[in-house]
Image 1 (tube, rainbow, N blue to C red):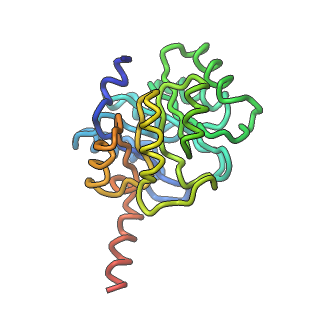
Image 2 (tube, one colour; image 1 turned 135 degrees about the vertical axis):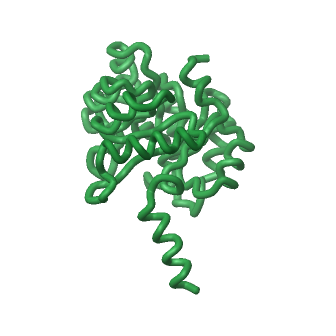
Length: 226
C-alpha cells in the first residue's frame, strides 16, 4: 500500500480549519494548532485554504489532506479541477474533494477530475468526501484512493444524525473497496474508537478538537440548561 496511507492507517487525523469571520482564521494560527495536534498524537492533518496548506506542509512531518472551500452550498469542497491542482501545488499529499454524484461547477465528472489531477500530479492521492454508499460506489468507479464519510447528512440525500452516520459508515466499509476515513460529527473519543471497531482505516476529528467556539458553546448551553 502507498506509504502515505500506511502512515495514516489506524490513526487519528485532526482537521484544523477556521471559518470566515473567526479570530483563528490565520495560516500561522492554524499551523500552530496542527503542530499541537501532531504533538498530541495525530498521524495526519486535514487543512483548508492554500496559505494554510503551504504553511502546514512546511511545518509538520505528517501527511496533509488538503482542500479548499468555495462558497457554502452545493459542491463546494475543492469543487473544480483548478481547485484540485491548486491544492496539490501546496505540497499536500492527499487532495480531498467533493465525492458526491452531484454536478460539479466546471462541468467535469469526478472521474475526469481525478484523471486530470493524476496526470499533473502522479503521486498525489485523492480522497472523496461522500454523503452515502451510492456516492462511495461512484467514487470507487471514478478511481479515487480514499473514501470519506464526510458529507453524510449534509447533501440532502440522508437526514443528519447527532453523531456519525453509523449506517453509512457500515455500508461504505462493507464495500471493501478502499480505505475508509470516518469523518463527520465524531465528537468524542468513544465515537472515534467505535469507528475503528466498525472497520475505519482512520478517523478524522475536527470540531471536537480544534474549534473552541463550538466547544465553548457546548459547555455554555449545558450550563444554561441546568
